[in-house]
Image 1 (tube, rainbow, N blue to C red):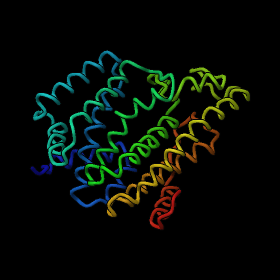
Image 2: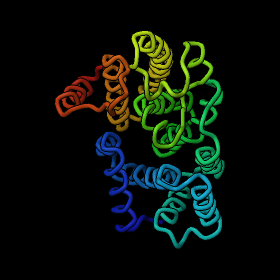
Image 3: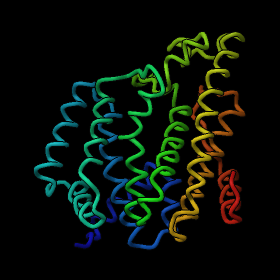
Length: 283
């Protein structure tokens, strides 16, 4: 069953709005895989927005469960659910992927602090890793790509966690980075806001974030090693995404992990990354 023009345009609108980096990368996919990627991204982004809006946790949980119930029993009435069910049949994506994703989204309405990296990793399986696995299904590289997809997806999400550490705490009281490592560095949750209030705190903050940066870099190395295992038509897109996240992480580190404002790449930086990717170089 083919996607309708309305379904494709709706998914395109969502991915362009929320992830310009990923959208640009998908433009290098063949049309079929590009549309499939848009449809899947639209699904996960739409659900993610339920728990990242102004809903209070209990309200978000009710909306999320309603959405989940419709997904299981009546997806035809929602354009995102309907098109994702079509995609699921096309690529043979197991229901377990969607269940894991919803479990992680539910955690955002219940759990706001993660005690150690194992807990963070468990959360990321449903919120990020299954997306990497789904891309393996779309590109027909699932068996050889999975361990690298896991690492790459975790790298991408950890970069987001580092960049958005302050806004996640201020706006939603969430801290996705490991608490035991925070305490080991002599910090506490309030330092996600006041991390530059003293020289002592600044040094401790850099120490803590260096731990997160090192872990993220190591995952990225594992992820990028798998790019050569992907079908040729997908390699540029994946490398472009990797290079953009890698450069963003580098920029965050160069700022001394100053999260007083959201770090992003400017047009010049994006262009340099694009040229490096064309030359098949890692950022």
